[in-house]
Length: 409
Image 1: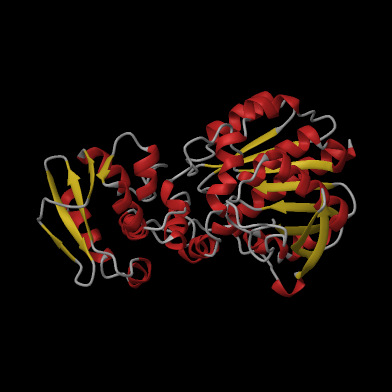
Image 2: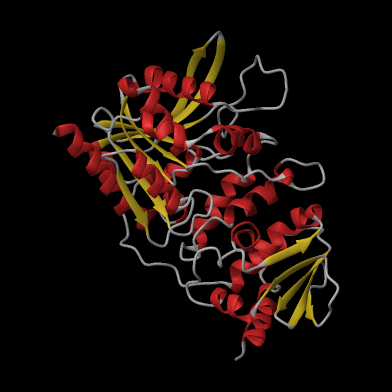
């Protein structure tokens, strides 16, 4: 089958997908797939169809060789999702009114997820028992502001504080907290930061736009270690949490036993999108699909759905408010050289499919943090702890072992 016919058949299969219906209620839009001088149109809505129409709301254009890369199993990084094509792949050109793309993104992401479908990467099953997780609320007062912070915890031993990604919550680390092997050696804590998940805004909040800063975030983390954990802890954070883990290692070394930076950014500019919080676009649907494009095509579909589900439940404005720290303020070129690994050991874990905090970012940070461990995680994306927790486990244990060996030496 030639490339055009193969793509057309996969697109035809995609419009029959039951999940596509859930992701596109009320959508009226069309997509032109342009393969060199050839192509076809995908009409979305009540009566979806694939036809030869030329006029479309959104056009994705590339030469046949680029489309052929997408059809590989697995496709190379940045050839695996609609948002990757739009933001990180110069071989593709995405055209259309930004607002229409914003409304159609959930459908477009799902269509390209099916078109670029791959066999999940196999991993050794991990023994887990979700019943070992216990959760509850903890009152914390910071600079006169009272917060009720929700925290899940499990296990016993060396304390580990998990920090979630921008716009998400502590459920991202549910698989690690349920891991019976990890629970034998580590006392694990996964918090929902204020304004996230089960941690409500403080009662003193007057409804103004939420904006996270390094100063506020690090103050929260220091208070969580002091008042919830009660002793210095390893800080293991993902993405935005990885950036804060580096801040903690640089500026709060006495209470930070070591860090595992999962998908650490160097300077993660460009993560903002006006439709993350916009009255004309469904924020829950948009943001869940926006991050879904960051995941690996070899991660199991069931786990990718769970990872994006968390983002579908974020409050309006929280995801872009977090990006004030992650995408606007944080600068690895400034923070990384301040870290002393003799006092605070550092492990950096980067997934091959992550185009927000890339493996190249991890290598830059590794070069600026002498004595740090850098590992590129094959076949994983931006949310490895939740999108493929079984495959992620080996890398995470390697990082923890590195930190513990450093502390014993």
